[in-house]
Amino acid sequence: MICLAAGMFLWLLYKPENQTHSMRRIRKVAIGVVFRRFPEGVKFLLLKRRHGKDWWELPKGGVEKGETTKQAALREAREETGLERLKLVRRIKGAIIYNYPKEYSARHGYTGTEQRAFLLESFDDPVRVEKHSFSRFAWLSAKDALRRLKWDNQRNLIRRVLKGRLV
Image: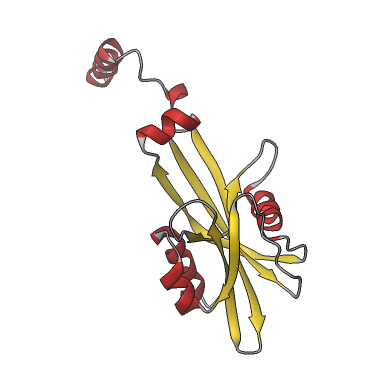
């Protein structure tokens, strides 16, 4: 017990002043894995980023103050796609957690992100992408969505949905 206390004392004594927990700011993000049932089968909605070379991704965005991740997933999906009738099917287990590059952290004030995903069913509403961020959209089969998605962690979300037979 004394060794543990002495070790903690030494850590506090030699801890650099610029390393505090308050410096670590994590951006909470909610992802909407939006799908729709078509006569030819289930398709997933992907959005093409306006900036970035051929970046296709799932609707996502930051969780606002006083909002749950579930509320944020629905809000972000509605804002980015124009879809009003979305049914929350379930939360997809797990979280995507990673640190941002130093340049991004310096520019935006966050050191990393914690992302939670939700499976959302869309019905027959027309898609109207948020024009500031996205140039177009596509309803794709799981196979095509896996090929087109930019980020491995988003491809893994589609795989998790398929493996769990959630659609």
